[in-house]
Image (cartoon, rainbow, N blue to C red; front, side, top):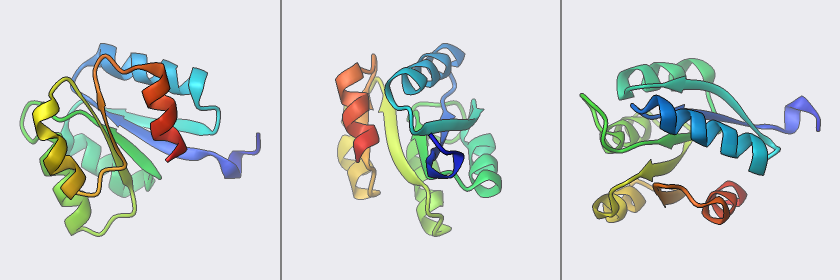
Amino acid sequence: MSEKSSIKALIIDDSKQARKLLRLMLIELANDFQVIGEAEDAEKGLRLIKNEHPDVAFLDIEMPGKSGIQLAEQISQLQLKTKIVFTTAYNEYAIKAFRLSAVDYLLKPIQENQLIEATEK
């Protein structure tokens, strides 16, 4: 697969284990995705998004400090082109997430078929 056709992805989650698992799932299930960075909080995530210009960011919602929802609002306000896929253990944020034009909303533990569907979007 040529490098220029890969989809650049960031993973933003306060859980190191969750980041590692999602990275491994993307490597295994979505060959055209390239994880170009990871962050453990929204502030570092926003800096990465501004610097790396990823095609998609996988965002946890419940993080210390700023939430993934607040980060998605900033991404929208700044008119950054990064698409958002929320990855969370909480289903109560789904409506708000989709109002922020999220591509998908994956509940943890993330199921392989749901991740594949999200990456195809």
